[in-house]
Length: 191
Image (cartoon, rainbow, N blue to C red; front, side):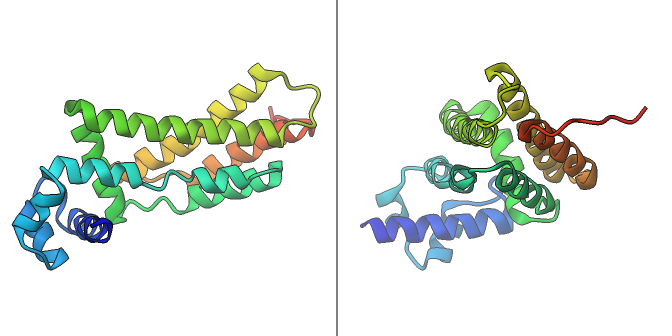
């Protein structure tokens, strides 16, 4: 039973990325999964339920953040994420549709918000671990650095979602500056 549900979810992800969420119907998912439409409805009541389960399964980069122990680890991960934001990526187009749907569907909005909270918490925890040796930073300063890094990641994703040039190099410079503060090195600014 669980294998069939996953087969349906994998098929739905492929169809959503190819056709878009709005243009996908349950028969598209059934065809992609090699199942009858009736079989799909045995496992999921609606396309929205399928979408909700996919969002719940979404990779929020929590695992890699949990593995970050040092400022260098954290910066490497942030740079990698920033460099991989691609406006042409089908998953980004699906994410844009999900954001739109979340605005009018409280159940989907709750799942998106929960994923965001998990990502934010993992990032803030990584910042705290990386800055643990810097006695000059209090919790408020660590939180500010975490918010700054999170803002960079969200801005890059939003730009990718709407097809605007992401200004990746500027974001990487800003991330490096924030991590320099976190690491305890003196910060120099140009005038």
